[in-house]
Image (cartoon, rainbow, N blue to C red; front, side, top):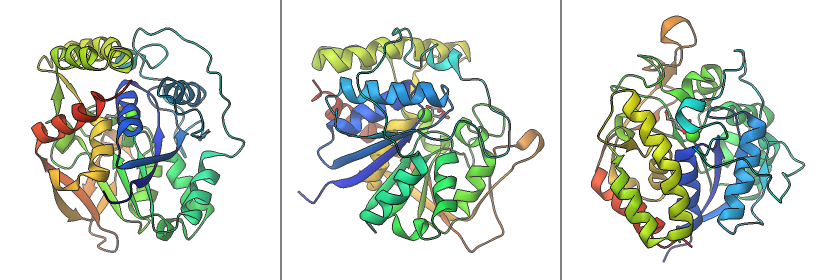
Length: 309
Ligand code: RIB
Ligand code: CA
């Protein structure tokens, strides 16, 4: 096998974030070298606690967690998405204090240092708002060149939004940060609603996962009930989207997706705020995933998840 990729996940855990992090913990082709926390589904403090708990559940006690920004770059903070992910971010699973401690470094400083130490090799996978990534770009003019690529869950080109008619939630929560990241010149892969809305999982899928991987699969199964219920409240009865796991899988299995290379701009104003749009500025192009072999992504997801515990 080729060497596993070195990966940092920037995350707001979050039920689908949990799935993505457990996937990364079990995937033999991923070397998870850290998590950075960000607000979104929960507050940043909660995201840090949740990230530590997820690593402890997964037995990855040595993987560091660096705490990220507490609020968006220019907008006031949004309330957490308790209706989608539950009060603590884990559906109905109760709060608990993690044993581990977060790192002394900020998320942005950790990202910059890791990108320097693993120059040309580090893949960053942001699955929450892009505030920490924008801060890392500000901190180090070489950051965009030092990373191998940024494979982000967010945005939508043709699919419309999920938090507003125009915007996907991660971009909506900090459009100014997203604008900074898309214009940075880093190699960027956008894993947006154009593909994640095609990858759906049902309660039966998660029941089967629990049978195969009782401990971590059982946790996912319990969390997924809350997540699936939210989907029914917005009229979606055929399953929940594997948003964040799709981004992690796109890091190692790009052949399961079809890509369009286009420059992306972000609306930061008015009712379209958070929309990802085609830009006239051709200096920075993004690989936008437009089509997916959804069955193959699901197969890959459960193949790894079934090996957990
Ligand atoms: O729009 C989907 C994204 O918003 C996912 O990252 C989910 O976890 C939420 O943060
Ligand atoms: Ca997320």
